[in-house]
Image 1: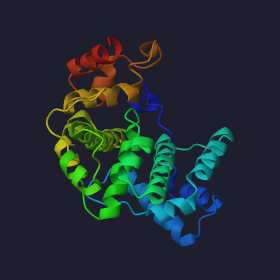
Image 2: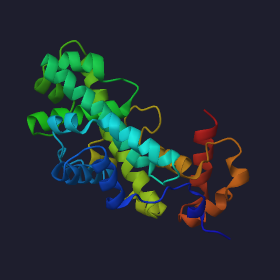
Image 3: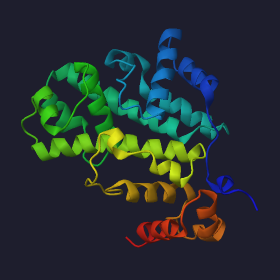
Image 4: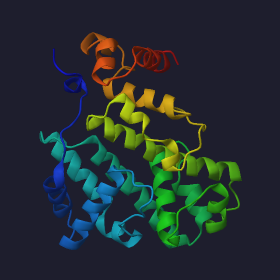
Length: 260
């Protein structure tokens, strides 16, 4: 029987050569290209302790829209490009919009109300990353964010939610990346939410704690939440064996993601 990873719909690794080609053809000079590659690696690894490698000025030079168009053309041309790279370019687009709005207004309240969307976690992640880059410090919580930015119109709860969502998307991506690279269920359990600035429980549309988040990651990886997916993929017991998880975990995954 084929190993489960063959059914994971994983796109092959882009590699530095592909990234360099994309960034170069988008018009970046060699120095900015190398820094963009390093920033993508930071993003891919969800390095919470590291500040963004690209400044707001760098992003405005890049022209993230041009990068997105380049990746889309590669995909339509039959090239294999990782989904996470497309996510990164989407993140850059939001960050570029945020940077430009702040440079024009010099008002974080304006930025928050016009460029940070409550239902788009990539925008929230880009916002927190840009604030941290601007002040060269890590945002601790909503109160700290309010102190740094002076945002008054938004409630403290709303700011706290933005911080949590920005941390959650990094945690979720870390789990996805680990699973794509062959991590087992016990290894996923070792990736702790607190390492990404999350409490033991939090409010989120998908995961609200470590266990539920892992279930959603497994669901997306193996398409468990897709109608008819189990007719095309190996059964839940085979998936459980492959990732060294109790069968009950896969059953919980199926129930959570198919009975909403």
